Image (cartoon, rainbow, N blue to C red):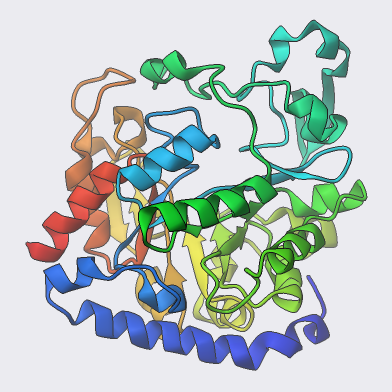
Length: 385
């Protein structure tokens, strides 16, 4: 963990901002359904976003290969309030590119490039032996010769139609695209980048946070009300960002029994279960404005995949001024709780609207979804129902 001194600078300011966000959220939730959904993202920071906020997960990943401009733009077309434009991984020459993971064998056509056959290797990524091709072994120019492909073709065979159509975007290209889309659409476009495996990359001399902060400063998007929310599964990455930029910050939380990799590396024995206690949430509220928990931390799952009990996480987080943006809602059967599945086709849709309604009813502030259009319709049903 970072030292208390690292956190102290922004703690008071962030705690106040967190409280302001919560207060605004309460006010928004008190409005009529139509008014609630009608809020538009402007220069007012987090409080200007509609509730519940629909976040396009890696763009419109349900319909296009993820982390491409085709996916990002479709998410906006489908009504997403925010686009998760940027799981940020560095190149060998220090640029930041948007890929789900540094291993790109499953998301690009790199295997079809004989000139890169020798780059295939096995590395230990956050304790897991991983074989493939890695962004940090390529220059940006080399990565730009590749094209994106569908990551889960068994669930999304229709998306393979678009394999090879789009290149890998850089974070700087995304920041420029955000401005272009804001002008074109006449409303503020929001993005939600994530620092991927920050401890792993820092050990390679490719620290992410400083690179992110430098680009945000260059484009004037490093402020409290800037339409860029930063997220990471490593709390120390968010603490580091808190000392570098004023953007809204979110700590991502995996399964309750997991440990953030920065905790593993530094010998911090705590698990996610410790971070979601009232004490853990108070600590997070000292340097971040929100949490991004897996949906199973909001409503538990039974062994058969059906929904279990609603937890106290939403209430506990709101009590300390944190917003909640859980992940990830998808329309296909395998990704839905058992009671919302319809049939057994791996690419068949289940009752996604029922699942959205169930999760919205917990009081979450927003949700990541691969199907922004479904999320927007589900929100209309929820706020006007």
